[in-house]
Image (cartoon, rainbow, N blue to C red; front, side, top):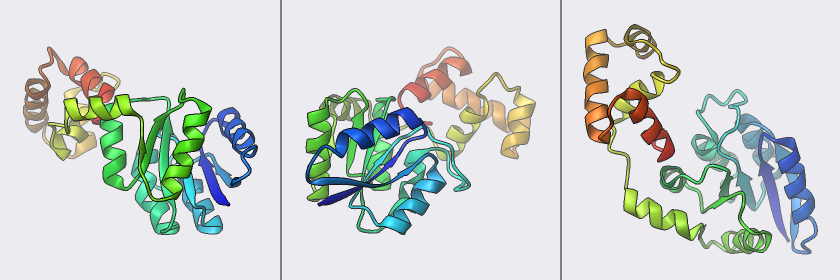
Amino acid sequence: MTTLLIADDQTLIRTALATMLALEGDLEVVAQAGTCGEAADRAKDTQPDVVLLDVQMPDGGLSVEDGIDAIPAILAAAPQARIIVVTTFGRPGYLRRAMEKGAMGFLVKDTPVDRLVESIRRVAQGLRAVDPDLAAASLSIGASPLTEKEAIVLAASAGGASTAEIAQACFLSEGTVRNYLSSIIGKLGARNRAEALRTATDNGWL
């Protein structure tokens, strides 16, 4: 029997997945979680074989940006667990980040049920299960061209924040922020920082 933890902040999706997977004779959902912190806690409590993990979830006190960033904490809580990221946001950069953090699988939420079940069984056996279209796109796009600091500055620019606001949030001078933004726009071939932010977000680099 393969035991499962389902972590998704949308209750309807989480419970629907649990109900659907419970129909499989060799799968058992032993816990559910709605935040990253709760996912780590439930993983520690139940030691599941496989964790189905959403990307866009509240941190739940874990101090992480999203579900992908929570992967190390979940693996620390349940070292034998194998993680499949299941997300609405099929972005190549997300796939790369998830695999670098230790995920064994990456699927989008419109994946057919039989493929999801097959992927769970594969990952439980120690094999990888990755959406083939995303894998191809990830290889073609490559890793993020942004440095860690550039990514932080670009993320801080979301919502139309001013240079002064970005500088304050990132503990940098306004001149340094302007230099970073100029570098970011050049690297991403964007016309302005809004377009650069959109490109980085769409590719999963933030």
